[in-house]
Amino acid sequence: MQFLQDTLEIKELGESVKIIGISRVNDEWIAEAQVVERERTLPGHRVFKTEYYIVKLDKDLEAYSFRQEKDRNSEDNDEI
View 1 (tube, helix red, strand yellow):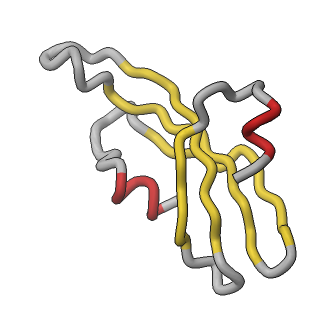
View 2: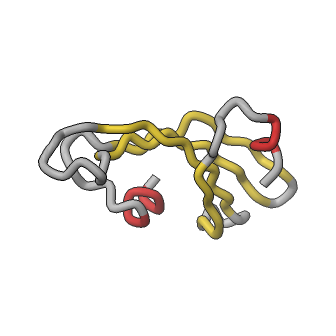
């Protein structure tokens, strides 16, 4: 997903964005993405972390909203 790669500056070797779920709700799409990114608090080390994001797309598949999931298994993540 180019939107998350650009927004989160995912550019280094080992960093990646992978769509792990997508669903249609009315005229929009909601995608779940797994992002592997470098741990920026440890400069000079190649330590990576995995984060999860929810991205909302309009009917033309243009991203207009995203947020990081705090607890991937929480029921609160069902609502955006």
